[in-house]
Length: 177
Image 1: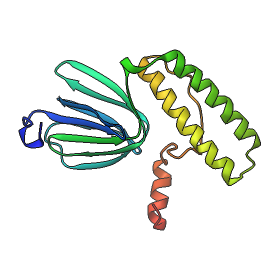
Image 2: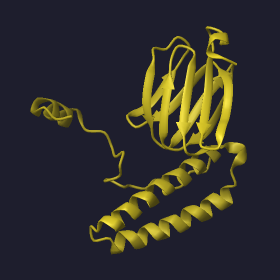
Image 3: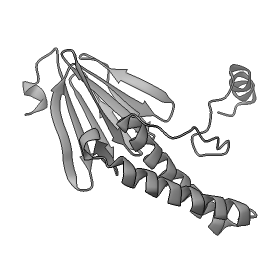
Image 4: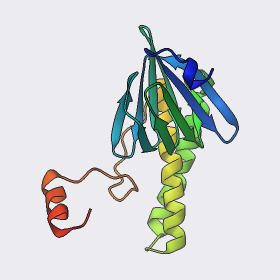
């Protein structure tokens, strides 16, 4: 189906990974996780380009909502199409929560070792970041399955908490952003 043949009241949702197109469907509404927060898209939306963080994409067809997990990537949308480019994708049906929990436990053990021995070394910091990204991906899969792990606080992670309004105002006044 081409963008021109999409009805005005629908969105063509397409998710593409390095393995190819994994989802191609007409939907009524989409929400996706950007690095600045979750965003939604309805038919007729203005063009949007967003960097994505690991999270849940939800899309609605009629009264049925479906969710899937995506890794970091990019989304490009317009009035009747949303394309998501990501390295990782999984639908709930493709999950084995036992395997995911086992992998998460192993990643958290490796992360604990790296954090205790890091000492600010660049190689250790790069390894730590990779492990945190893997931990986030595994945690999102468990969230999709409906059995999320306990929350983990990582205050210096790449997409940490947003700035407070006061801090944003100070940054604007000083010319930094």
